[in-house]
Amino acid sequence: MSLARPAGEALPSPSYFNSEKDVVHMRKLVTRFAKNEEGAALVEYGLLVGLIAVVCIAAVQLLGGQINGVFTAITDALTAAGIAPPAA
Image 1 (cartoon, rainbow, N blue to C red):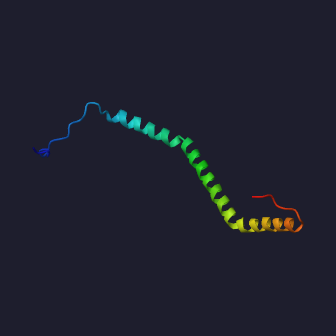
Image 2 (image 1 turned 90 degrees about the vertical axis):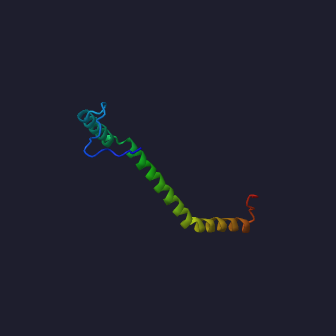
Image 3 (image 1 turned 90 degrees about the horizontal axis):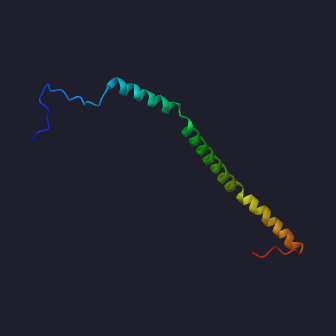
């Protein structure tokens, strides 16, 4: 059984295909898709949340040691003054 088409024989045209109507319909779909900005706003919000998360993580990494030092100094000063820190 050969699936090859004899030379010169055209492909059959399906009866449901109307090129002018389909092109106009496709053009309308593409135009509507291009004008739709709801998805773009959602992506922008997602990028902003991601950027804020990266900044927060960087701040904790950079300042974490310094903040720990401040609290350790406060705990040492309170202990030296005779005020016991709360039990952990």
